Length: 279
Image (cartoon, rainbow, N blue to C red; front, side):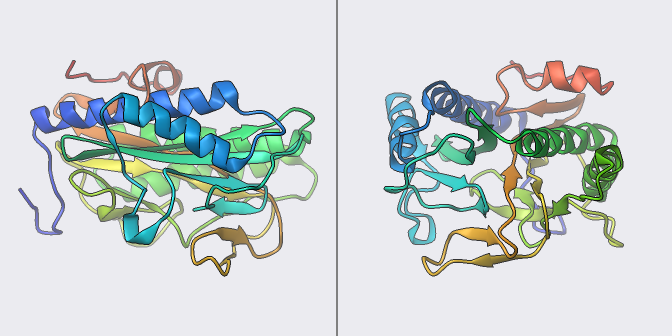
């Protein structure tokens, strides 16, 4: 079951179960997207996602993970990732990232999206769009990759192009302390999936590999720090951040985005990639 790098390679039947978990996550994030608005608390969003996961008969991946106290992570404005839901009230113009995981029959799905509330600054909308584009570019690169390093290269190519298009001297920061990961019978497994170029080429890509691709970009520095709660990661300079993520399976015939309702077909077709499905 494990390769030389202790990577858990999945059978087609196991990928099908992960797809079920991925669709529960998609449902939960869709519910949050439909209901989020200024005046809600971040705890309200946690309740929305938790209800969907419970109704599906699934289990939250995050709740209790190393002591984490909530169903989802809700990170607002300068919070990059792992924000704990609570009494914070959402305001017009906030940029809100929601990270969600679910377990079905022992197998995990993991996905994140960034939502920009009404009256948002155009630069925040552009930041979220750039992060989402970078994620899809990384996923598309995985479809043709021999090594996982191709994902980080593709992410940085998108960021470099967006930086050039800004024409105002601003550059996006690519967060390096937190990266994508293998996923399966545990939420976090080998191998790491970097969001940036590196000398090491990364693990070999082969059928049965399942990974979470999740770039995090900021409107300033790439440096981060962790708040006193031990979880919430914020940008060191107070700049705003965005986070997008999907769980992806590598199959004999191609890739399948397990946490996208259409398997990633629409966005990947734009990038010249056809999705391979098992369902």
